[in-house]
Length: 263
Ligand code: CIR
Image 1 (cartoon, rainbow, N blue to C red):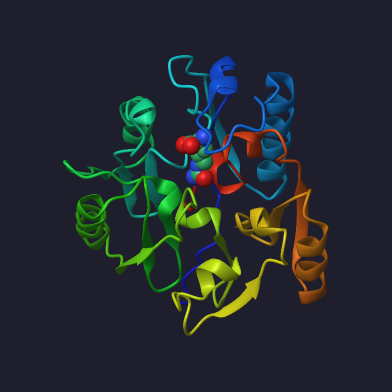
Image 2: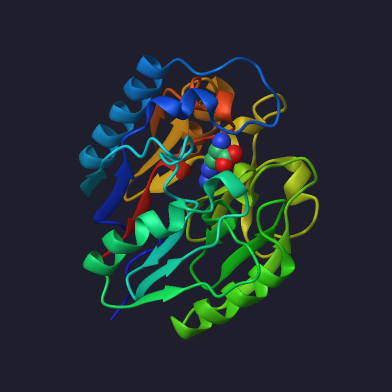
């Protein structure tokens, strides 16, 4: 029996943005996001997930954690089970425990990433035959090695790779387009990390588009990236442009706002 593609999902978990998102972490301050506009971007994203065929569980806002709408970072989820991560930013560490109860309700198998290392879900790219763990300022070697063991326990094949300097997460710079193809910035792809895969490069000046999101038949792409959208459409992908200009002010893109899996 042919297994489902790695981008086939039927479930997602999201969390309503809290008002403190205006104080969310950011590498460069280009101004605080507007809360009402963040809510609008988030609700359009939920609608797009639903239209792509997913059942979405929406968790309530967590005011104590400004970045808690980015649920991808404190957990990793698969059909086979979930892993509770150890986020590498001090202000986000507690988000993992906040996610634990929900994961225990939804998954028969939940593994706690053991300390003392750190790892963020944004550094994990799931491919058909392997799971890439990108070392970054949020995912250190100890965390990556512990995570590799957790992934093996779920039957996955982990590979530890590097995120380019000054890039928040590995997946800030790449995403899966189909089982044989990734979208990547040139600065990441030059490392040779995607050897053996087809690579489509983000056009110069549109590096932020690399954090796209393949969901079933569609690819969600930031609407501020017209050249990337045109390239993907020309290649034959069904593109869903989504506004990300407010969440981009806190270094976020399209993968970070959900946990996705096929139940
Ligand atoms: C952070 O710095 O943690 C948040 N402001 C943005 C997190 C984005 N998450 C992701 O790309 N997976």
